[in-house]
Length: 224
Image 1: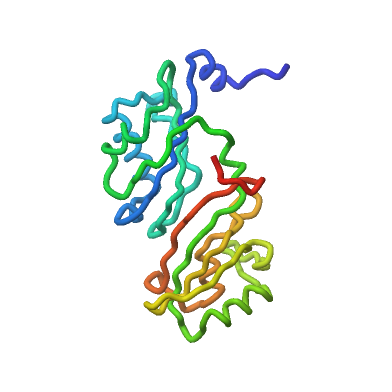
Image 2: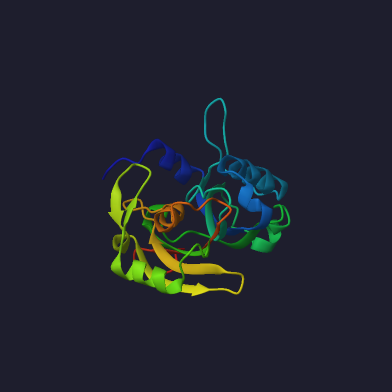
């Protein structure tokens, strides 16, 4: 039988378990950086009198891990934070801690996780683009045929390998709306900004808006 890592042995010894928080990041909260979000969670949980497990060493920190660092300016309805809590605590109701977070950080669910973050496969995004010389028909043709995109590491990929379940529409304000599932697994990850730049290289941050709708696991189920 393989030996358990010392950290895991301590968690078993002190009955430390994981509490998963699913939350929204909307409004002005979309401009909270990842590091500030970590500090915000630590302070808010302390104010709510939720005890968290801490790392060891000279500078112990609360054991809080997020599913990923969402870029500034992206609105999300499905962010996740795993928080280690020592027993005999039980995960509280969302209503108990919701009032200790600032406006825009909305606690949706709290539960014991069913899967690791590495099991995340795809993410559904809603992207609003200014109609810059093209309409829904042109975009539908573009996505149906597929096109090459260049990631930040200069690797070129085919859109059909990373983007699927696409729906395209237009609203009265002159924005084209793209609803699409995008690969966001550890093995194959595509940023929605890379998709936007591939569609229109001249787009700036003022020409689009991104909303993260839902996250799915490798079986196509909503990630829990």
